[in-house]
Image (cartoon, rainbow, N blue to C red):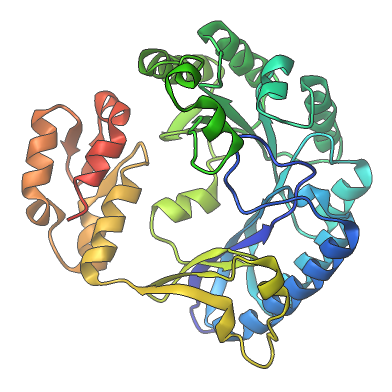
Length: 385
């Protein structure tokens, strides 16, 4: 049998019950008719695209959004059926769906299980109801607990919980409380991100400028929240394997790890990004235009912003994405991929950051120090020439 190349799939569901105030993702509210029409077009895209990637085997699938769990269980099952019919999916593939508390029930979870989904990612963000209301979430902490219990009862044994720190007016004790409450539930994986105020969101208008910024945790408090996250979660058996991700042993997210380590991925659905065959591109971002593409007649209008990556581009991405991993980047793997010595090519950048105690060399690996993680954006940007 021909050895197939590994590839990941990302499937975008651009709908939500209500857009959160901090969210800059490609998502919006939509009625049932729009959801049904979108799913039909998405399935058509999946069927057409699958024929273009017969030399690949799918190692992970991630259904993200938006709020994928806003769709009916039947819709998700139909999407997954199209994937399995068209693509060669590994028997042990990690298959994740993002879900929001308040949008799940036993019926949907049953469809998920039967359609091959084996990992649930629940968007909690905070265990404090006041903080949830402030950021525009549709659920309470109690709603989350009920959804978490339903997921466990449905037989899922690989659950992620998403959290956000540095919420306006949040203090260290509140963040500690959220971490402990979630850790005591023993999910297999916890993602803990610091809030970024993105241009174009309601939060940008609310929390930029002198008065707005006063309500945001300052840099020192933000760092304290980051440090305490590692310490508290370590006490509950979670190890940090990436800057913002923690897992029980053996439950590191394979899909996201693929992003950081250069595994090819194909994005399906509105605005989804791809990295395949040395190219980066994304699909049409306007819903009306996406819906009017005749996939079988001419799929070319689907693609936008196609970028051919040079050898230098690929080496740079290997460095600044790979350094997100706690284990760092491997000089041996760099040599295998690119036929060049990583420590020679980036000698000056590495030397400068080692002197600043931001990077540490443990041959053949290069990784961020604890101090380097604090300044990771600066360090990673040094590798982009």
